[in-house]
Image (cartoon, rainbow, N blue to C red; front, side):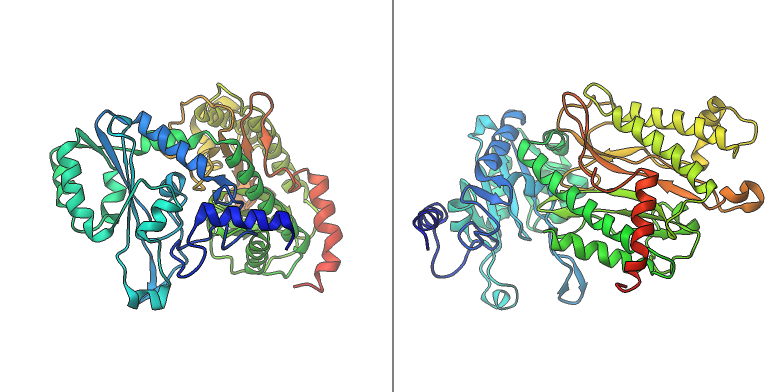
Length: 477
């Protein structure tokens, strides 16, 4: 070991402690996973200091003499005691950096000292034989920055004292009450008498604007998705199965460091592209079809979401090209609109206006002009919103309204599309063509940044990529 490596290891030991004996952190630390975490980080890319700043910001925004209760996610089971892979709640992760199940964090307002208290599972030797030891009270304080830590069996009694001394309790009752321990009579009473207030409006406002560290993680997530989707384009040819491309996408994202898909992949050939959330992925791709792929990954807590469409045989038909060019131009203008001061609602209205002009050019609405289509007919061909915020969840910060002006480092998915119903008698050769083009876009003080820019979108680039790789792909899948 070099001298510099030895110094770093000693620094990690001093910072993280508990370097020998029984592991009680319950998740990677810089000492146990130096290939993943630097000495200053709690989770990859995010420092312990940044997590502390987030908690301090929340404490300063909370009402006087209040405290917030934020449960972590619980385990979900396939059958019996066979668990699904665990995913932490995005709000809880944002404030704590903890990636473990069955935890509850309590945050007090600044005037109450801004204390952070963590409740951890009680020691259970039998359970640990199956699942390994979770975080201990000592680790919560020494490693993860909690001011206080207690076993979960004390949650009810400690809540009774805290509720009695507080003016209000911040708790997102509708989505959190079932995540809390059962012995919470004090919290139930607070709900009944109107002592609780929602927390997500404060927390989502914080999460909406990304820090520089978060922006870097979102770029890495989008880059992993772009590379995986590009490989799927290269492997496409008639006869390939939709599920095979879905498998390639997930495999490549995980090789790039992703923990999971950010949602089930949509791999839709032909008219199935007109089904917005087509999840069957159970058909073979056919010559002459378009393929729509909507997929993303979650990498170290940050999601990506990208959609591309490409011809299975490497060449767009004239009708496919006509629809694609309309959507691509709308996509270009919508991305350019993602600037400070504009809003998601305005962006959506812009997409309706532009797509209605395209529908009029295609003639699918008879003699109706763009204004009439935008008022009465567009939703048949464009039934979804132009986009959504992106971050710790793929549909992120839902409580942030669509009328809130964009700020630098706000990140969103922009996804205009057109879907021509599969009715040849009515729509002729355009019937069954579904095209959506989606990118992850970060607002800046100047031009927006397309985080997923590495996956081709220009028609000639798409045709070149799919067409030239078809022969090679015959020997791959």
